[in-house]
Image (tube, rainbow, N blue to C red):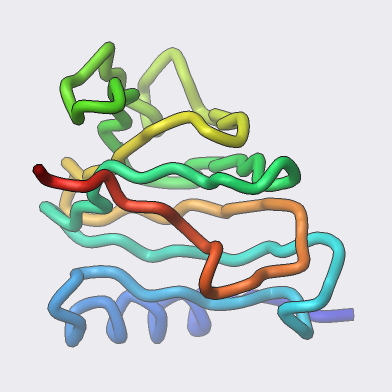
Length: 135
């Protein structure tokens, strides 16, 4: 059994405060080879994950926002926004699941946010995410 405590999450937010990306990850899986990858991501206000997608057929991913508010956007291949919506505290949406190939971005708009990410493994860094090319 493994417990994730408030102390663990506090340390995670402390790591995020020291990061230029304003976020930090806590892997819950034991190996990048695990069939299910799961991790907590602590984000601070204005942390931004640029538009990207996951190209491999097994690369769906689910975000469960446990606290705070994230702005999630779906994008066209040229980077333009198709639609955006808020996910988290006092929002209609608490959880989202992306299909492989969905181009998306994430921005923390609350002071801080905590999300649980779940995705199919294995995790292969060179295929982790594909950024849009700026021509």
